[in-house]
Image 1 (cartoon, rainbow, N blue to C red):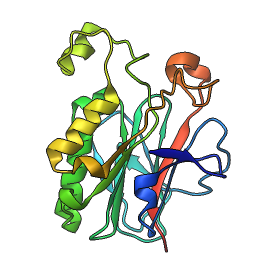
Image 2: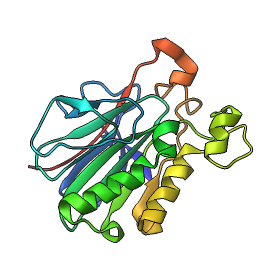
Image 3: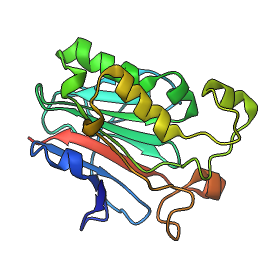
Image 4: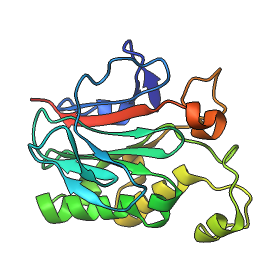
Length: 212
């Protein structure tokens, strides 16, 4: 379940159960949050970057992981899927930007594998939240993209595809929170949408960190 906070952020009630985690999914009305965060030069890849104590804009990639308290890590989206992951056992977190290219390359599954190899995290213990993204109601694609997701088209459900990756990787169904908000059609322009606004579209920040 997702709720809107007083900071005009959407938060996952599942992740909010972890007191050591700070997180949020931005919308069009979110301003000034987060003030600072570690991010990447996003390229729609499947590259996972270990942030540790590095801050600012790092190298190219589309997912960040860290075990460093106080290092807020985030991605920018405007229709693509933001995914936040937290491991309560080892207190590690991940943030993922998954468009159709990243999703088809299984960037979420690779981020989970990276958490496991770097920090010893167990997928069964992880919690994940899939944030607002363009929904199957609006995401029409061509046959070359729909073929990647084994659907006849003309639409693709990127959120469901990423949820399936989480499940295959070993997360429990009750440990996955999925937003139902479509960035293109929900509300009166509640979210930025590149599909809707083209080059004039802004970006939302989705971020997660470990409280210092």
